[in-house]
Image (cartoon, rainbow, N blue to C red; front, side):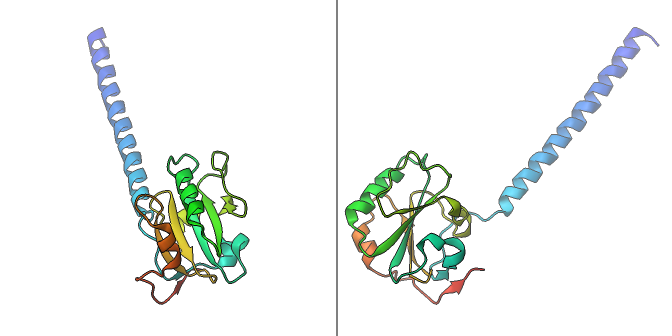
Amino acid sequence: MTTTTAALVLAWIAIILLTLATAGLLRRVEQLSSRSTLQAEPGEPVIGLQLPMSKYLSDLEGGQAQVLLLFVSPSCMTCQAAIDAIVAAGPAGHRIGVVLREADAAPMHLPDGWVPLTSAAGLFHILRIPATPYLVRLDADGTIIDATMAVGSLSLQHWLTHPSPTHHTPASTA
């Protein structure tokens, strides 16, 4: 076997190995992209859905007051402004929970009496929270009354005191 023939054989082996590696990478990318499309797409929480308070919000369980959940992420630039706006709106009579996407709430300054819910991050997925900051208002029994983004021209005082026009018969989660 001549040197030229050996070089040609090695070149073809390298081309075949590169082709196989590329095919393997493409298959892996396809698997990852199909897995992400199978996960629930962010949308809107279902008005009327009833969350079992003891399972998801045990820190806010009990009492007859409505529950206000604020979904935030410490890296969110508008989340602290949403907290300040809610404080300014004076949500008297509400138990307020702050659902944190990350376990560390260090950059967030929560008012006294607000309950940080670091262990309830799964609610982002269960309730299909599309973005932060996001507000969800629940009855004392865990039924979702209303949900909205907590930014922009939202009139918090009106939103906190008026029922949702889309409120309907409760569904339940397991």
